[in-house]
Length: 67
Image (cartoon, rainbow, N blue to C red; front, side, top):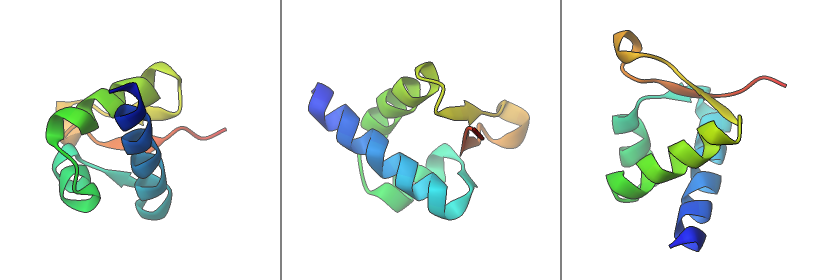
């Protein structure tokens, strides 16, 4: 399962790099992975500091962290 989460995290990274930011619904549609897997991958990326997550007022938008 860790491998699948890592692959989906890479897909999310590339999607956000191309699009700038996205809601969960946009990620599910754009990446074509199960919502649960995308949520696990977002958690991984957030924990590692690679993405920032906006609150519910922004539709829980995610974006790559600027470094």
